[in-house]
Image (tube, rainbow, N blue to C red):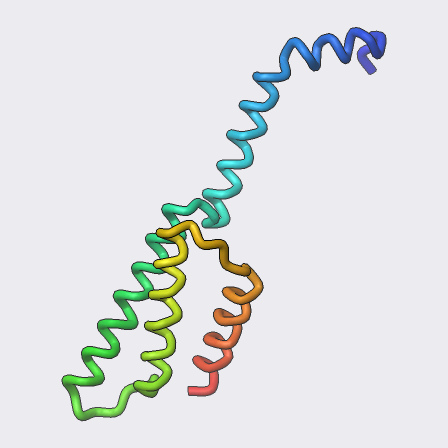
Length: 113
């Protein structure tokens, strides 16, 4: 215990309010970065996934061999990531539960191939 009055604590809080807010914001930004929640990171991630899907689609069209992912699924995935990328660019809010559901469905589909 530091043995100071409540009034002193309130004064200190008001005196250092800006510094406290700055430190809080830095910690919050670090968490966002750690858990891939920054807008730039999401755009990069969606764009990378879109390129991977596009590459897989091109390989499927060029080769006669069977791919592990049906072309219909690749088209659906391409459209989904294109929409996510567009929504991030135009600041359209998306439901995170829809994104999580899509990723869960995708992971379940992968395990069935």
